[in-house]
Image (cartoon, rainbow, N blue to C red; front, side):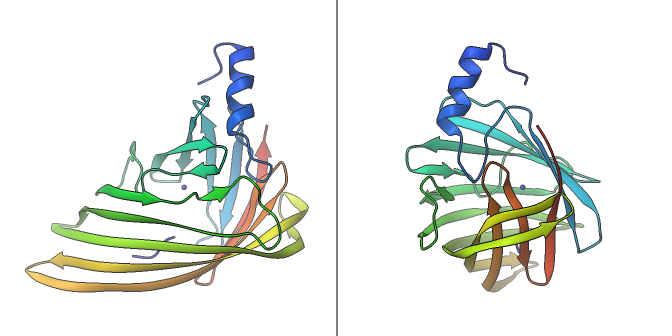
Length: 215
């Protein structure tokens, strides 16, 4: 339950698109591929940026046995994910609907001392074996840039902003005629390097690190 995420037709139009969506600490560039390694099982996964437009883009997450697409929107305030659970999933027996989304996931003017929050109200179903699980959840995440650090990962050494986040989940889960309350608090730390993006993340004892960035 814990949070464990086309090629340009015309160069001129494509450049205008990524220029509007681009973020100094989260590059939005068509075709770029980030490879990460997770300490959970020492596996790797990739994130590829696709379909960059003037106000949106797609990130394609590819794991060893499944993958999914995550849709983002962008404006002067920053980058936002309109849906908590994204469309285009494969290999996952989960269907969620986002009823409400608030705030930006990553503000445009990110600096030491920046603080912000975002949240979702979601409902839907998840399949676990032959069991159907119905869920109603409210998720709120608070974030703060607490400093700047030098971080070493397989992809190299980076000077990165350190972001501390707390996600609080409240709701209910119905399964087999029972209603189970959901009350989760997950703390995480992320490091973002300029012109590179996320280089390291840590949550619930699991660490992910950037292995490579293919531009």
